[in-house]
Length: 357
Ligand SMILES: N[C@@H](CCC(=O)N[C@@H](CS)C(=O)NCC(=O)O)C(=O)O
Image (cartoon, rainbow, N blue to C red; front, side, top):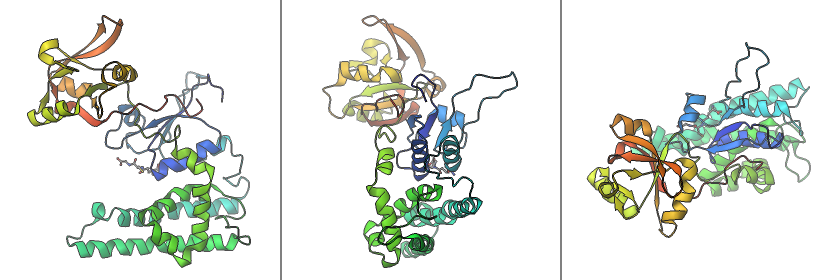
C-alpha cells in the first residue's frame, strides 16, 4: 500500500481482545490502517455512524472510485473475525486461513465458535462477576463466578489437549499442527485475558502445561507486543474533529463541579472578562497546550459535545484569533456540565496518522 493511498480506518481499543485479534491479522497482512483509539465510555460520532452497534473493532474501508453509477461504497466491517478474514483474504503470507484445506478450515471454525461463544461467556462471568452477578449475597456471587471459571477451564483443557497432540519434543505445538493458524491468533487475546485474571493460578495449573507454553511464546514474541504498543495500540483516545475541547486548571474544574457550571474562559481569565469561553478544535489542542498550559501539572482536557451545547442554548461561533488568523470555537455562555463528555488528564495525542507513518 503506497503512502499516498487512502488507508482504512480502524476504530480500536488497545486492551479489547476482539480489537487485538483484528490488529494482529491486519499487521500480518501488511495492512496499515489509521488507528483511532476509542474510549468506550465516550464513543466518537464517527464510530457510531459507521456501525450503530457501537462495538470495537470497526474497519472502515476507503471509498473506491466508482466503476459504475450502481456501485455502492463498501460497508464498514464491524466484527473482529470478519476483519481478520478480510485482511487475510488480501494477503496471508503465513497461511493462517489454511487455504485449500477444508478440514483445517472446519477445525478453525469450530475453535472460533467455542471461543466467541461459551468461552467468552464464562470468561466474562467470572472476570466481571460483580457486573453479571445476579445473586444478592457475596458468597453466592463468588460460587457463581467459580462455576464459570471452571467451565472456562474445561475449554482451556480441551485446547491444551490439541496443543499436546501437536507438540514436537520440547517445542509447544499449535492448535492445528506445526504452524499458527487463524484459530491460534484469534484465541490468543482471550486466553491471555483469562490468565490476566489470576496469572499465578494460570501459570501453576499442572493440566495446562502446553497451553502455558503456547501462550508464553506469544507473550514473548514480537507480534502481540507490536499491536499493544504505539502506533497500533495508542493509550490516548482519538480526538474527533466533531467535538470541541477546552483545557482547564484542575482547581477551576473542581469549583465548576461544585457550582454546576464552568465560567472560565482561558488561563487567568473568566467568561465575564472575555465575553466567551475559549476552546479548540482537535487539531489545535497541542499548540493551545504548548502556548498556555505547558507549565501546569495535571491540566485537564474537557471533551465537549457541540450538540449538547446547542440543546442548552449555548451559541458557538468559529472566530479568528487576531494573533494567528486561525479560527477557534468560542462558547457564548457558561459551559453546562452536561455538555462535557469526558474529563481526562491532558496527554499529548499519539503521532497522528496511520501505523505505517
Ligand atoms: N462480536 C464483536 C464483539 C466486539 C466487542 O464486544 N467489543 C467490546 C470491547 S472488548 C465493545 O466494543 N463493547 C462496547 C462497549 O463496551 O460499549 C466482535 O467480534 O468484534
